[in-house]
Image (cartoon, rainbow, N blue to C red; front, top):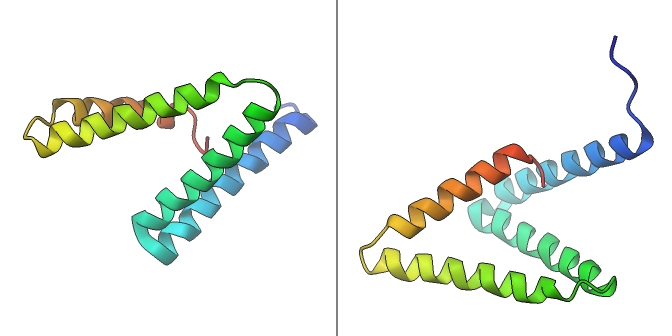
Length: 101
């Protein structure tokens, strides 16, 4: 028999379902650009919350992630797709392990 979910687990599951549903709606209305814009809004909101509680290293971490993404795009444009492929594989692996995150 499966135990009932706790209120924290129900909230987490509900939030995850909301993220997935909102991404789907954004993708349906504006395509991949809509999905990207949705995740940027969610990320900006989360960064604001992190900063508010004193985790100011969040800014530096996000800047590094942006720089990594730009470097991968530059390398791909220059004909070297290795970093791009590695970045996408790693990102997909992380997202697959934490759906709706």
